[in-house]
Length: 319
Length: 212
Image (cartoon, rainbow over all chains, first blue to last red; front, side):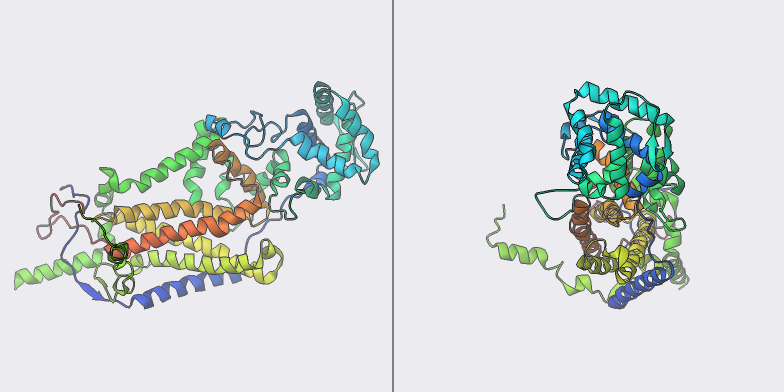
């Protein structure tokens, strides 16, 4: 078998008449007809978002546990790290630390205390607990929150209120009950995305990040959207296609050494990028740039061309 | 050393092929570039055209209207299936150009531009999903941010719908459009890659053909 030079090509071929404009209009018509048909038949998949109000009403104990972790610094965002704060909970690489805090977010203040202080202007019963919490030392605040978080493991819900065994929770129990009420009211979302400098609300970062952790994971799991469930390529509405073109990075996420690494996102995306680099650089990589010739699929693609030329050459020889 | 005395003359020389009707509206094609396999690139480009048209309608009506306005929702459905068609035809086109070694004969940069278009198409589609406003947006904004943050790309703030809107409607489609234009322009200027010679006594592979 002869190895072809990467640019080996036939040189003897003819040009045939072509109506290129007709070709372009035909392909456009095919695509337009196809997507119109699919849009009419299937519409667009949309799964209703998980709102803070819905989460507070449906899972009051878990909601209070989540907001308590924002107070004691154990929450997903409270402990995240750059680009939000100085935490280390989701610090995957040196470059992440080097880039720094681009989108400052103090979960205790931005998620809990500022919204409660705003709510206190219309409901002054919130004020005493807020003042007591503010006056306490940071260590005391954390100790109260830690005890309350532990107590929530034994919580019950009675008449819409979260009840925990008696304990030394300081004002945290009251604050968290107030947060639950605020969440249930639907007003918390507005408090999270307030920006006195502009009237627009394009930046909804704090609203989206508020439910990070258990609430979103619990909602995503039944929809097969979690990373370990190949979630990237799944649609939130069963039966519809998802981002199937991300199959390779999604597959990489499943590799045990990636899945079990604390830097799983960085590794999976980096390896996905390496795969793309191999694809993009294929013409320059010796061996790989000859791969199509070895595979031989081109013989099927140009079957008619080869057959036509072979018959022409045969007829030349006979004549 | 040649000194370019007149920038206009130099520009005319550079642009005369790319602005030529012969380049963009050919009346003949090589005999080997026929059939469905050679429609896949045009089908991908046509899908992009459908995406741009439906995207302009959606952008003109403002964000989120597609979730509650029935007419906009239908346009959003066209946009959604347009994305599926774009990737479907692009993937088939990718397989065709791979199996035919389409980078031969000075077409390596054409392949590279196509690969870049594929790469940029991914965040272009993804940012569209992010601004849809449903649970899929919510979940993916929160999940995917960790990877970008870890790679030092935290400036791209996925939970910020305003930034994602700008990325999806202006930055990424313009970048993708430029890459697609460059890719197609090179295809038109260089022509479609000719077939591999078959290893037969009639057309044995030539040995050292210099790369143009």
